[in-house]
Image (cartoon, rainbow, N blue to C red; front, side):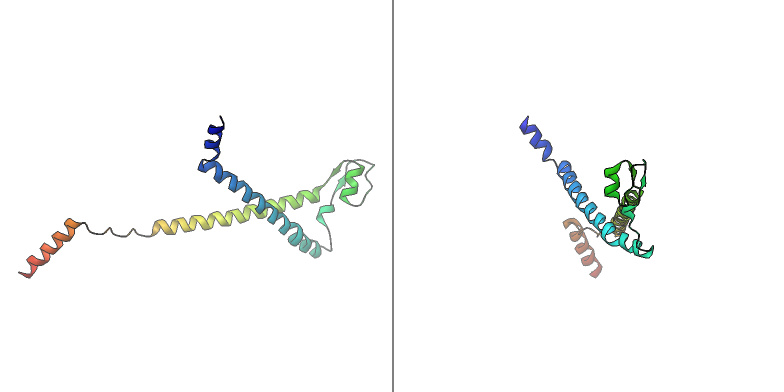
Length: 138
């Protein structure tokens, strides 16, 4: 059973999938940082210093806090600011993937459009060409 598992795990598709998941997780962290540390502060500055991560609606009367962390401790909240941030993360990831896939497809199309080089003539063709050239000179 261990041997079968090793064969399964070492197949190209499984290893490729594992690498893709790891790279995807790292890419997700980069995009989260881009949105949280670069884009959202700029949007907040444009909108008057608003911090989207603290946008919430308390769903009970016990919620009186002014920030999301304390509000969650007090009771149920609808954290729509966090949702906006996650949605923006998704849109950025989707757009970047769209651009990457578009670029890959463009490269594939340009490679397919290149005409294939003519194969080198075979020995028979070279010999026939030499015979033809000799006959032309006579």
